[in-house]
Length: 108
Length: 122
Image (cartoon, rainbow over all chains, first blue to last red; front, top):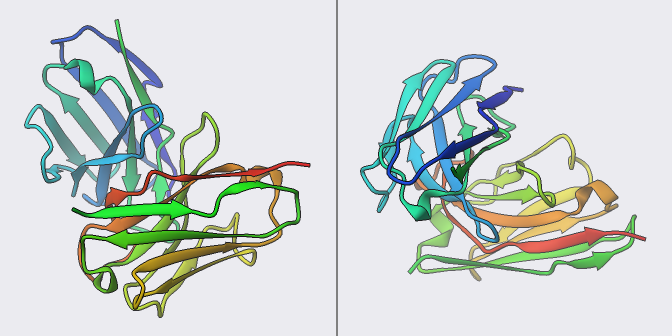
């Protein structure tokens, strides 16, 4: 099973600043990596797939990069609606599909 | 629009069974793989099970293998999860989720239901 880790666990950022979230896989997942955003009481929302492709309707301030075992989700200028928990998920080697533990982006 | 609506959750005793349903609309249900993903209170996401678009292939997380069964009725655009021998650690919000790409399973999910809460407690 591929284990996904995310850092930091919590990221405190001021609105308008850039946020950089990291995701690491225990072995290579190529670029088969997705990112989701989840707000309290809501279902996750797909942001990025294929490590760097934005899903339909996702603003351009969200960008993903990386391959192999190291990945990054960047939010260029945080808006109030971006404060949430972000999960990475690998789909290169399954079952099982595995998610990271999440990074909470909170208001500084 | 694409919509998934789960139902069937509730409070049950350990050892009990539940059948969760997920009613799909707004897309061609029979051409997309579907999954169940759960989230324990205050915790992260855990993949539970996947079923292929045609229902012929299923995979399960080790934590539920032998106890849970995923199935689908394409004629009714509905996904199911039969959960037997429930344990306290199965307490979670259960989400159904749709694959993004047709006829692919176990990839990434572009539509999720609102979730249904299963609480296993004596």
